[in-house]
Image (cartoon, rainbow, N blue to C red; front, side, top):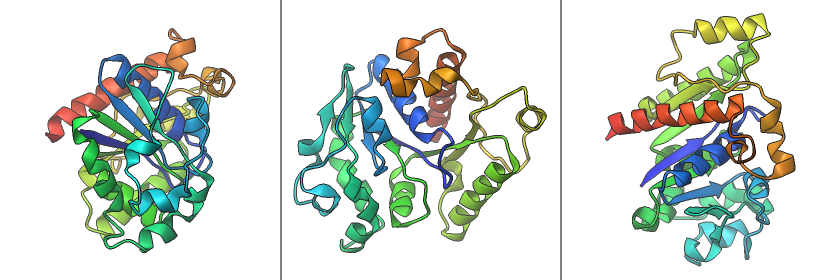
Length: 250
């Protein structure tokens, strides 16, 4: 089982769209796949047409008073399941603090799924917190969608700095450029000549495309309703890049 997190401190950079589309591609290839919507806003749950609600809330889920199996919902797509969001996830840090090993709790909760899923995607809230530390501990890969702007690059540097300060494995941090608008000179300049400090940069950028915004209307992955669009092809390319990196991490 490979755990892939889509994470950034910034919101609005394409984390959820990435998780939703890559998970769909993984399942389409025949790999049993789970998406855990960890963001209390519940966007991934919305895209998959599943109510963002956990019976008993996030506290019951995190503290292990019920197996995660009981919370998982099937999506409209074969081999693709969802562990929904819940608005109570906004208090997830508090729930984790009350456990015996608060930094390793997500890893512990996911352990029973090793024989059930080939991929688990974590759609993460935009924060640096105890939840984030759990995500970094549990994930094999931390995908960092990065808009090619100065402030977004600064955010990526903050993430790398946090990993180094906490003595975490920076090899699992894999940035890629998202929401790229090549009409903008700054976007073109950064994408064509990435900064040297962007280690493990995935080679396929995701363009700014209205079809990604239309996911909210269709409530499906972009490759499902617009398979020939630029964004759909780009997500396919990004997924190929990620699989190559995963094979090197074995």
